[in-house]
Image (cartoon, rainbow over all chains, first blue to last red; front, side):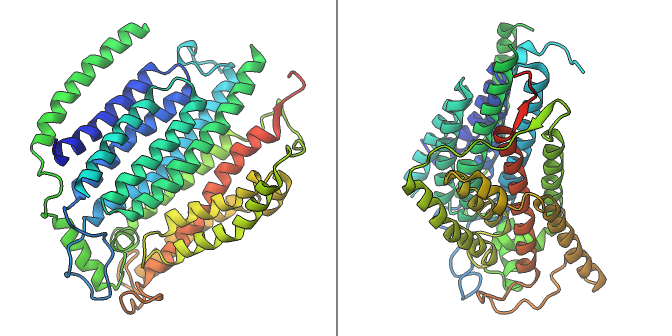
Length: 117
Length: 82
Length: 246
């Protein structure tokens, strides 16, 4: 198996299996965790797209740019901020779950038939 | 390096499957932590130390902790009213 | 919709996505190729502003406006969590239970690691323009460092040390300073969040101009928001209980 095939397959697989976790979940906490797995598929996709064989980390030595090739820093910047921001969004979803547990006494999505005030 | 990266990617795929399909959220917090560690390894091997640092602090420590706290609060709430 | 129907529908969608995925990724260049036009542009721009860590240069110099957007998402989430988890009318805030017995070794380790972790977090923030790290990662390290006290079994000490009262005020201050730094660039006539400070020598501790400033500002903002978030969830679990009904 080549690196290319593995990287694209794993990235796509994580998105699909995360979605499957959401569909199958019996507990809203599990739904939130599965969503974060689906989201991390995009990290794998982006980091793989920026990878270069034999290239070093995107940190310039004292000599400046040009001596050795570096991997693509743009995708890393995108993924880096998204990891932290997605954690706070996960926290928001978990806070909603806590509220649902308080209001309805259950966190099983199948038991939450109608919206109640 | 390439072989290691390929293996780490495959392990991440397997771990992600385990996390998404674990039914018990309390166990999910643990598997999510392991998954975060593997994802961090992928980033290190792909020459992305910045991202790995971000993933290790957030994905391995912070999010599983939030999940565990939520599970405990939810269990207390929904257990009490039924 | 029954669970079975839902799974069948999901299966159809997944098969469709798989086909599209194979078609789409088949047209992409292979992983590991040496053609990265964005890389070439970003590295040149980072070197021009004497920022050793190209990732930090992108986040806080080349696309600082986008990072301001991410800071805003952070702020919005923290506000929403704080609103959702505030004690409701039918809840009461209990004094925390006496902390459970913790092994003395755990307690010593918790207290001993606190200054070390705080130092590491500050180092990660302050050297974000030179080495891997920066405001986003360092902020999280700083925030989790304070919660070692909880691990050490001292929730009262945590409440005392952890700036719960002012953390919610520091978070918007971090975002606000980000905007101010951006506006200074605008006022100087160089454009919003332009790197107007002297950039210094590549690799020097004081180099990279506004990247260092924005790293510190983002570290404050991220650290305060994580402290607030964890504080809200901990309070929910430790001191808020349903009223006498329980």
